[in-house]
Image (cartoon, rainbow, N blue to C red; front, side, top):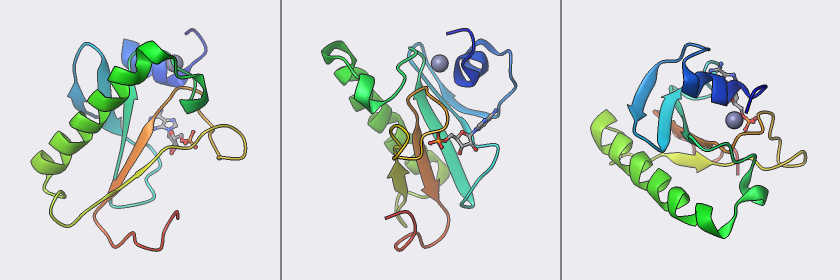
Length: 114
Ligand code: AMP
Ligand code: ZN
């Protein structure tokens, strides 16, 4: 989608520090982290939010969790734990309307964000 910053990151028009990429999924560093590790994992397909998921998109959500698990293993935060946050819509505090999964780790997050 033309005016979407995450679509621009996917196309390489906006630079990002990538942690994982395949045909369907991209994981990159958050430009404004709120934890020592703050990764965003997104589908390459422009799905605006959880509220816009179609039946055909359900598989990609499962794959995204697989990528999150792989990153946790590879980056060494699987054992200590991490938090996955998905904001949806105005009341959910979503600012970028391209579905994304915040992966937060590297500190005690028990009382943060929930
Ligand atoms: P949300 O509030 O859930 O829509 O989260 C959007 C997130 O995107 C925020 O945490 C921003 O810091 C992050 N963000 C915005 N622009 C960029 C960018 N160019 N590169 C990396 N992360 C970004
Ligand atoms: Zn997009």
